[in-house]
Length: 178
Image (cartoon, rainbow, N blue to C red; front, top):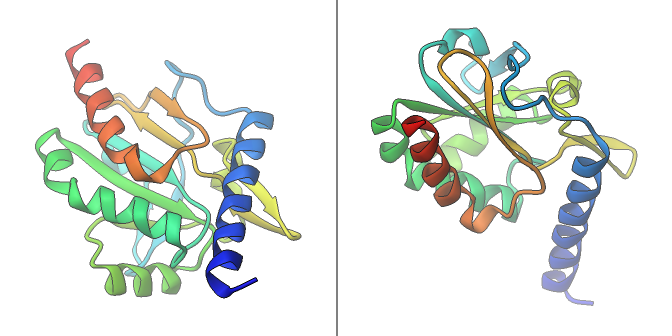
């Protein structure tokens, strides 16, 4: 098996595990308060969900920095960043990677939104977005739109990275109308 097939197999396995993990866990319910948290960013500062009251928040969980699906998803959020900003929404990405890994990932990939380090998977677990992979915990690929009052407005589980940002923008537009 060549390296390309090995990487593809690993990527597909992660996606399958993510789907299985997402289905077996309980995510916060739409209409309920989003669990608050405080996590470290790639620049070493602390970010809490409550810091963003009054704004829409796209809180997305992803398995690992520097992997193909996670890089694609991050690039798509970055591509659409101006659209999120004009919708008065912020993007926050969460994985179990370290703050230093996030700093390196943002620098290498040109990302201008915050990635949050959840190395003990506590927040990922609170959001029903954790999976076991070869004895380690990773964040499952789930996303939550949180309204300006701090309530969960939309939940996505088992996200497909390629078209996700576009779908979130469409749903955000609809949610803002209601």
